Image (tube, rainbow, N blue to C red; front, top):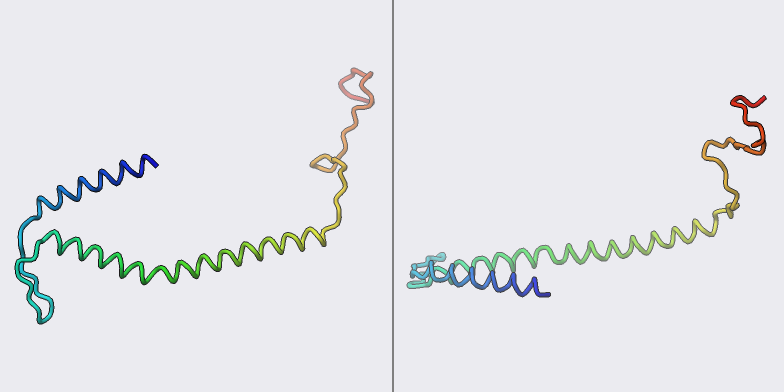
Length: 116
C-alpha cells in the first residue's frame, strides 16, 4: 500500500513539473471552431484523457466477455475432472518399479558379485 502512495506522489510531482514547463497559451482549431488562448497543458492532458476513455469503452466489453468465457471454462474443467474421477477405476496402492521389473533383494546373505 505504501508503494502505491509513493508512486502516486512521484506521478503528481511529474505532473506539476510538466504543467509548469508547458504553461503557454495556444490557439486550437477544431473543424470550424477556433479556441483562442487555451493552455497547452490542458489541451494535452484532455487529449490523453479522451484517448484513455475511447480505449476503455472499446476494450472493456471484450474484457468482460473474456472473463465470462474464462469462468465458464473453469467450471467446465472442474465438471470434467469430476466425471473423470467417477468413471476412472480405483487404482491399487501397490507400488511397482518404474520399468515394471521387480528387483528382489531377498538373498542378502550371498555377498558374491554375481549371484548364481
